Length: 129
Image 1: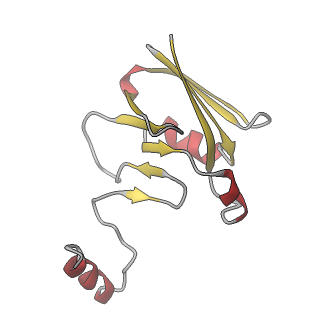
Image 2: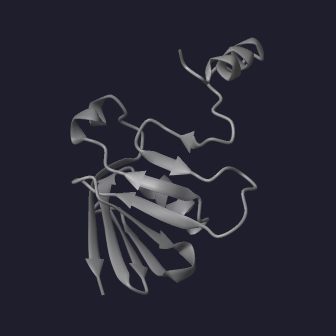
């Protein structure tokens, strides 16, 4: 039995069965944001295609560039350069500017037709400086 059953049961009767509470704020495309008002050291974790994960501190983010015609965001950290390729990246760029994304993962491009207006990350390229 699901250990989270009672919590979900209570959420159902509070008319918000989809609320995930403080656990995470995740949408359908592998991007998890920090909760509103969550403080402390903020890191961003990138989940690469092969399953590897790398997290970097927002404190070491030097510059970010959004190129709508190329559908990519380039993040320059002190030790790494991370390039995100995908679709509808403008909202993600705004969220990055506010240090909101906690985890960014790749979504298979075949799901683009299911979520045509959503942010979709097709490729994450990680390079060391």
